[in-house]
Amino acid sequence: MSGTPFELGGSVAVVTGATRGLGRAISRQLGGAGARVVLVGRSTQSDPHQVLPGTLEEVAAELRGLDVDVLSIRADLSTIDDARRVVEETLAWAGRCDALVCNASYTPAGTFLEVPASRWNLGWNVTVTSSVVLCQGFLPGMLERGMGRIIAVGSASAEYRTAPASDWARRPDGYGEPLLYGVSKAALERMIAGMHDEFGGRGVAFTNLRAGEMSSEAYHFMSKQLGMDGPTDQVHTPEEAARSVLWLLGQPESISGRIVDFGWLQEHGALAVR
Image 1 (cartoon, one colour):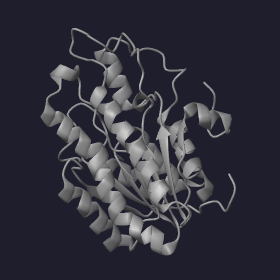
Image 2 (cartoon, one colour):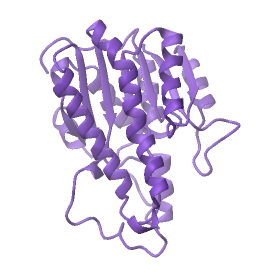
Image 3 (tube, one colour):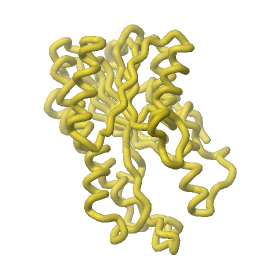
């Protein structure tokens, strides 16, 4: 990419969905690169996730053990008020946000007819509306300083496929093609592209990662539920994917507007070939 690379050392980075999986790995990578990290998540020691491991306290302690300056914010991103509070607490703590990683998402089980509108509303808020609030809160400061990075962690499921995998559809255990997940991730892609069209060329880069399969806690849980849990030697680890996110964040502004997937990252040497 042409231009001057973005310096992560000394920057302030906000990561949503930071309690496990890719978000936790991204937070580690950012801390290792010298960033001050704001961890945003819902799971805490007093209110953990019902089935998945990982809490804000654990991630914060891990990063502080690596001498990373950390702020952890417990937030329910299905509510606009909590998303706004993330902006307020970050600015009160550091005065700015230089890099925003919108990673939080929601994946309900069930086919289209089994997932009620209330869950669509919840999932949309977690993935899309919270990202809108965070971008509207942090982008003005980035533009004023002429420097910043916003990356949305999307999914390969955002790309429309006329023939979805048969093992996701019409299963008797209630798991179907995760339509809400894919629709919300597609919305992130459109939002990133739109922000680039409106604000590109002013020092802020907007990118979207169509992430593929990763051997995260949620991946293993869903695979077991589907009876498909097996070897993961052909699946990227969250740490591998996180290193590619760090690479994307560090690229010059000329990367702005791109929607990239694991194949693109492999072609550019930012992700190992599996």
